[in-house]
Image 1 (spheres, rainbow, N blue to C red):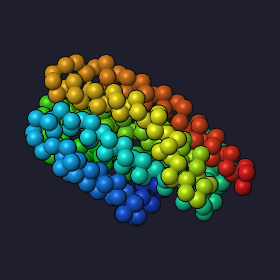
Image 2: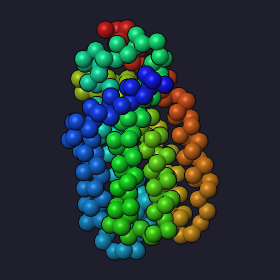
Image 3: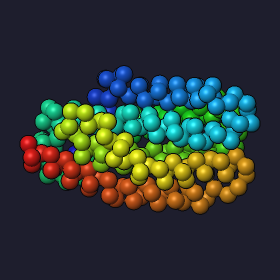
Image 4: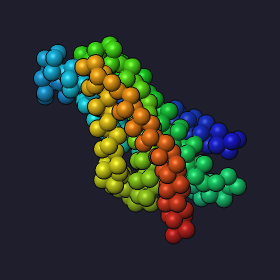
Length: 223
């Protein structure tokens, strides 16, 4: 646990010092929320029904925008190689890096969600469900995207490949999260959708750190 916390706190400090790095996805998220109604329809009733999908698509793009830097700088300066020599399993250290990344992106997106909901005329009673789906869903997105980031970490333009590799795995999360928000808007039960999102999160927590650590180990062995 000490190594886990040390890696997570290190990544949080580095992320906060590089202010633009973690602010860019948040600014991008708000820009999409502000611009999409201009292209679709500014009518309040139309926005209310589309709000969940708009917010979730913006959140997905914001998470993907920030994923390229998850491992790349540590790979370039040799930090990942040093971490691989630590007695702590690499999967545990990778999970610490993913959680630090999520705290700077996914959690901040969740905190911005009520503002986005107000801009899109989402009913107040649906905001709680929206925030809950974002809490679980953005962490799932970060875990899945970490696999793509680990697979492409040694490629010069690997960040362009991460969405292509991981997008099929993101689609179920976006579908069920959006369905939960829309169900809450019209007063239908949302427990089933939330249970599926929780199942996706648990599955990602079990698989993603191991797969990412294996991909990083393959790059280190090649180098």
